[in-house]
Image (cartoon, rainbow, N blue to C red; front, side):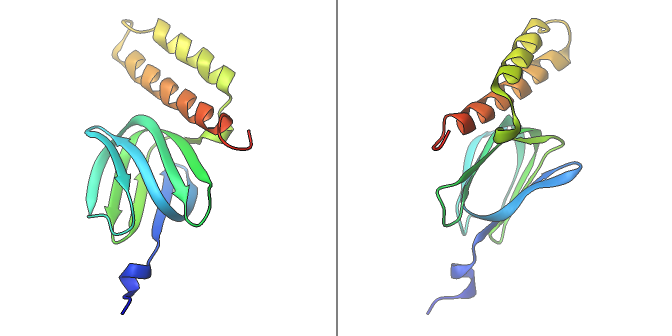
Length: 141
């Protein structure tokens, strides 16, 4: 006998401070936390983690599509086949221009040593560039 929990999809909400960036069912979510990378599949144990400035990948349920986004920290919550990814800033990889991201990364690297915010800017710029490059090098691009 199949229970309701066994057929329940993994529902994901990717949320920035000002809007929901993406919402839907997923086969898998991969994110970088301050403790390391985490992969989430259906029926994952409950978890609450701090996100690092990095790339989040969401494998869309029933398709070959992968949603790629850059986040600048935040939280990842997993419970009852629901994943919430909350970050102040979220950018989809397809919305990031590679050349502009490279220029921002170089600018941020030039500021290292000037203040503590510079290293955070470098990590954010690196995440944006990785997200943009993953999308531009994927199938159909």
